[in-house]
Image (cartoon, rainbow, N blue to C red; front, side):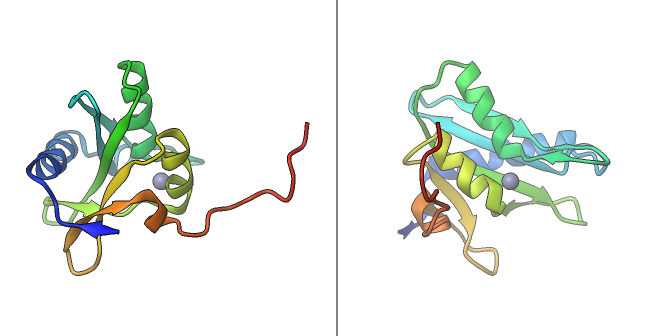
Length: 138
Ligand SMILES: [Zn+2]
């Protein structure tokens, strides 16, 4: 289900955008994320890039929330930087669409539904048919 953004959703976008404008580095940090816990606290994350492997900003924000003692993470957003230096909402990659709801069940994501229109999306709508195992191995 998609729904319009709340004021706190817009503030979360601003928090991620402020971080990325400050910390963007094409070689090391291309994406920033912000997650809001049930406490209302905001946790930030940055992508980590190296020549061989990269780690998404979403994982960093989730880890920060857990380190901060947050048990429930309600909403997350990620932003990238356009060539003109403007931060815009970017949608999570396939790995994050699996990892984020596994760590934070029930989380909402702020996502671009097209044309720069950002909406709030339930995790199940980002990955409607998640990967499943044929069986469980010991
Ligand atoms: Zn990702």
